[in-house]
Amino acid sequence: MRIDVLTLFPDMFREVLATSMPGRAASSGAAEYHLHDLREWTTDRHRTVDDRPFGGGPGMVMMCEPLWDAVNAVEASETSPARRVLLTPQGEPLTQARVEELAAEPRLLLIAGHYEGIDERVIDELDPLEISIGDYVVSGGELPAMVLIDALVRLLPGVLGHADSAAEDSFSTRDESGRPLLDCPHFTRPRTWHDREVPDVLLSGDHGAIADWRREQSVERTRRRRPDLLDPTPRPLDVERSMSRQPDGGESARGEHSGDGPGDSDS
Image (cartoon, rainbow, N blue to C red; front, side):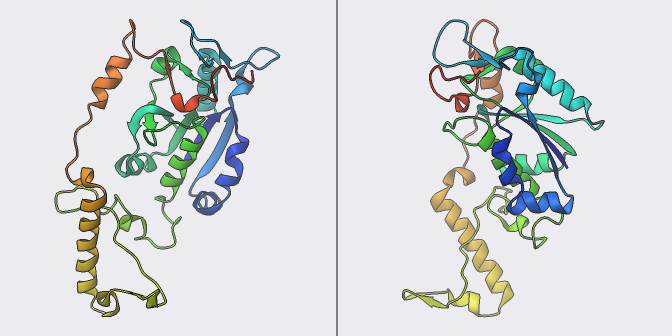
């Protein structure tokens, strides 16, 4: 898998992508990373990528042309087509099912926004898959992009130490109705710690009983901690996103997680 990243801060990625599972994926050849500084596609001596928003308001908005030129140049550098992904708090919530889908792609182009957001016109023109890592705001799309990369590459063949490790993770395990479950509790040595004992079934050697116990614990933990997974309330994301793209209103810029703060800009 080839992963291209468009960002204003490529240095943020280098150590992360050389460490742990992302580093193992790169060293094994399962993944290759290409970091691209958006400022390389600016045309003025200040390397400006943002400007004040029409209509007023705090913060700065990333301009269309540098991002448009960058996407087209990066995609043209390699013959295989790229799946475009924009990291934004206004995107669909990232799920394990979506991660599994993206992990099957030969090439991804991740776009990390910043400042108050990105001009809506270039988002509409590029039409990326928009993904959020949660209902909260961070300073830019860089950290969400790293989260997505880590989630992806650990699913690539040969990256994890055991072939079944990913299949037994939270959200990969499913109940009889196909609903995702949280992982079961895990224990290791010593058998007794602070007067707390390892469950007897895990010491029994009865693999069938152990599998049944883990399954029951997984279901019960999901019921207690994440009941929404077992009885999810549909979120009409497609309707919301369609409404947000209306030309007569809606949001003028994507990416609250792209705000360094009111009026902040280093252009």
